[in-house]
Length: 399
Image (cartoon, rainbow, N blue to C red):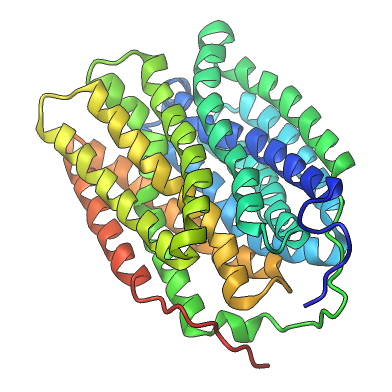
């Protein structure tokens, strides 16, 4: 397939990577920093941890679920308008949650406002980067989505420090001002990928019905049920085991830092081992990391063990995020990639909507974390079994 000039290494192509990195760093830093707000928000609003965790779940439901719409939108109207909508949504949403007096207001502001903001940056900009690259697509997408990991690394500890300094409500106002400014700049700089010269429209629905796509969707759904539990409950678990508030929040940052390694190292490994095989290995690594968390539960409790868990989870999570788009592009091509990724990420939306609240309910009911971690590990094992059944042969597309 012939492609327009400037693809695979020109300055405009790498500018697209920089914009995507910055937007994901900002939006995911805010979204995944919620663990630091869980306890003070719960205390202020008079809600339990399980109920308050639904704020994060609605956020992930929106950020992944709305990706089906934002991915299709970027294919139609271009990335600038979509990212601009994300900037507005982030600012308004955080202002609303900073003034919340009841849980439904926090759900509206953070769940929908922040969720829509991330959705307007994640799938659209991954698709833009994928369109700017061909031979080096895996590398470019890996660099772009490493912004998610660094945002996670910085977001939770910064949020905890802001809460200690000015309280959780004013902390959200600070994040609103900073985050909106960054996204407005990203909207100004982003540019759509060049059109492929011999591209033809390929219908979306037939590809969604293929066995390989359905298996990828099912595996992602199951994985997400367990994957997002630590983003909400690991900080409070660490505090219950004797760590400080900032140290507990820092574990989410460790996940983020390790995910950067996963995105880059596993992206490079995919060039030798194959994208699909490396992607399957990420599922195995994530499931194995939860076995480490379970071992900590059954032992005396050690912050060092939790760091090991966070590192293993982060590497697997980073590879899972980085390799998904290249895998879909490898199987289906780049035409309509935004729509394909958007629908695929609704699996993460539904899984993340179930996992953290269910874990919170189990923690409250059992007055401990054993059942929630064990259940998450079992679901992750099922996810691994499904993804191992994904074939490697390119899927033919028929209308």
